[in-house]
Structure formats: C-alpha cells, structure tokens
Image (cartoon, rainbow, N blue to C red; front, side):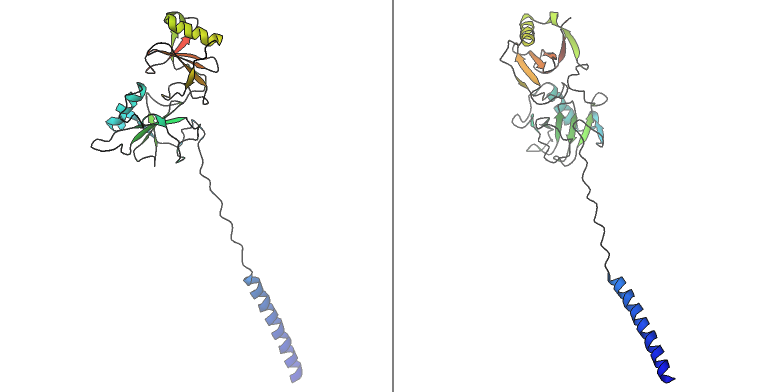
Length: 239
C-alpha cells in the first residue's frame, strides 16, 4: 500500500514539475519590442506657405519696412556685398525650391557693429520671410493683405502698358524679341520677386536705356520696367 502511494505521489510530482517547467519556458521567451516608427519632417512644396506663422510688415521692427522699401527699389543697400545674394536654405526650414529661388537682405539692428541677426528673405514667387534669430525660425510677412504666389506665366497682377506708348527704342527691343533677332539678352533672376516664380533661366533681360528694360519669358510674356526694377508693367501688344 505504501509503495502504491509512493508511486502516485511520484507521478503527481513529475506532472507538477513538468507543468511548472513549461510555464517557466513560456515566460522566458522574450517579446520582440515593436520597432519605433520613423518620423520624417514634412517639407512644404515650393510656394506652399502653410504651417508658417504670419506677421504684418508694420508689426516688425521699423528697419524691416526700410529694408522692404530698398528691395522694391533695388537698393542702395547697407551691405552691398551681402544684400541680394542667393539664400541657399541650408537649414531646410523654408519650402524646398530651386537653388536660386531665395535671396536675403539685412535688416539692420540699431547700435550693432555688424549685420546682426535679422534678415528678410524673398522668394521668386513674391514671398517675403522674416527671421530675427539668424535663420533659426521664419515668419511669412503679409504685405498688402497677403503673399499668395502666382503661377509661372501669370502676369495678371501687373498693370498693363500699351506697346504704342513705349519709346521707339523700347518698341525696337520688343520687336527684336518677338522676331528672335536679338542675341544680347541676359538671364533675369527675378531677385525682386515681383514676377511669377518660374524655373531658373525662364526670363531674359534686355537693356533699352539707362534705366528701362524689357524682360521676356519663355512662354511669350513681355514685361517692361521703366525705372530699373522699381516697377514692372505687362506689355499689351494691342495697346
């Protein structure tokens, strides 16, 4: 009788050990941690200003308005070797555009012995950005109610000027552009950001007189500036 009880106890003990061993083995299997999802910063497409804070020009330091006016008249700038140069956007904060799309201008800081940290950056689509901390952050400057870029070739925002009202020299240049007989044109980079944003090399510049110029686009656009890029007018061939 004692032997039978011993056998039963032994069997039960073996079953218990097996059960506990199975449980231990199951618990020992490590769970693979879920791989963290990679989060890529979203880069706005060229001309897309969504996600940027906006600020009115009048709300910025007074020197920003002075710089804006100088941009409209193409100078004279306080730092001619630095103002108007290409802004490469190496920080990657502004929308990714062509290499020569952006240009930067100094916003002077009163009392500073150097250029300081304030800049206005322009885009060829008419965008204006302000940075007060040397490119660490940017705000879109709202001028005249907004800065909505126009499509390449759209001159609807320019006031027209009749072809017949141009000077004889200007009409001669326009005729040469249309006939394809001029070979002295140079690439117009649209640094002022007034004309619609287009690919690099889209615009060609032709001198007329000491101050006036004719600019042509590859889509057949014709623009006239009578005052060395201070203002631009769409040439109406029927006017």
